[in-house]
Amino acid sequence: MMNINPGNFCPSPWFHMHIQPSGKLKFCRWQHQSIGHLESDLTQENFLKYFQEEMSTIRMDMLQGNSIPACTECFTMENHNKISGRESQLLKVGIKRDNFDKTFRSSTFYNEFVKSSEKSGHTDLWPQDWQIDLGNQCNSNCIFCSPQYSSKLAAEFRKIGITNQMPLRNWTDDSNAVDHFVELLTQSKKLAYLHFLGGETVIIPAFKKILTELISRNLHRSISIGFTTNLTVWDQSVVDLLTQFKEVNLGLSVECLHPINDYLRWPSKINQVERTIEKWLNVAKDPQWLIHLRTTPTMFSIKHLTTIYEYAYKNSIGVESCNFLERPECLRMNVLPMHLRVKFADDIQQWINSKSIPKSNEKIINFRDPNLLKQYIIKDAESYVKYLLDAPDETHRLADTISYIKKLEKSRGNTILDYVTSEYNEILQSAGY
Picture 1 (cartoon, rainbow, N blue to C red):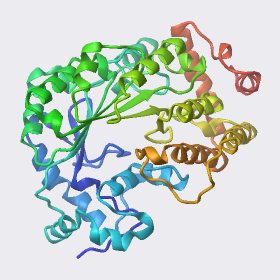
Picture 2 (picture 1 turned 45 degrees about the horizontal axis):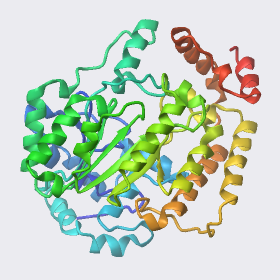
Picture 3 (picture 1 turned 180 degrees about the horizontal axis):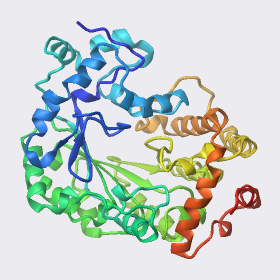
């Protein structure tokens, strides 16, 4: 029997799965934390058992209205009026939060929900929507990233003593595992969407290999591809493969169009980044390409966030961030003192007010609808105004901020003071910089 709670129900466990850089499987790309036994290994040839059986507990929790601790990241986004992964997944199956009961019953997955409720959460479905983390091979040392997703940062962290451990081996380093995964995709029923992340996807050999294999098996005509790139590399052979797919969702990672992006996404150069954005825009003139600038604002980039919105607004492309920054905690926006948070919130609000978009209280969920693109950009900007004004005070982390960036700066030979304004200088120096 179902006892759905519209406030926390998510259909994602009926069609989505996530493979991490190590090859471990998780039930959701937005999953905030591990849940006991709910991890498995792709190379054990048991992904279907994991999806259909082991994820049953998650599905039953959803059907019985239980709150799931691993889902807190989505709830945090929703609390600040930002589009969460949960809301995006609801949209895919035709469920609307503001008309939940009716749209739940009319959902394309309603019969599957009923079947699972009668079978203790089991499903006979296959994953149709994947996030595929290819590994941590990367040419960048973004200060808000982690060794799990950047080989360069992993080596640097170990060298300067931030960690003495290296991440697990990338699953895509094993060519047999890659071949096996492609076979699984070929056998999958109703496969619809594959989103690839790294590391830096463009330089990971498995990305090119998987794209080539999907094309050779004629899957490029029926599935959509998504991937994210850090805008520091270009491989025309990869571009040529991508243009053959039915649809491509392209994420362009950039924190802001200001030189501090070079500090945050070390050792990128903002001029090169902007030129690479232009190259991708030229490739993606085909209407089947959906482009988003992907940013995860930190305490140092939030001042310049409107440069992202303005660029996206002028070029009619989207803006998307997977979440509000969780780690490292010392770089969160709410580490800033409140007077700066209020100032930056006011700056964003002034940018919003400068646009001739009719005011609306309606939340725009389908951020891939080109007809709603500019309205969505405005709504996303409003979410950061709300976060800056409402998020709990974490100024106690400033000492950790100083310790962290000084270790990195000693390794890199740079200083934050070359990138920030006097308002930052004051708070950094007052905290011991």
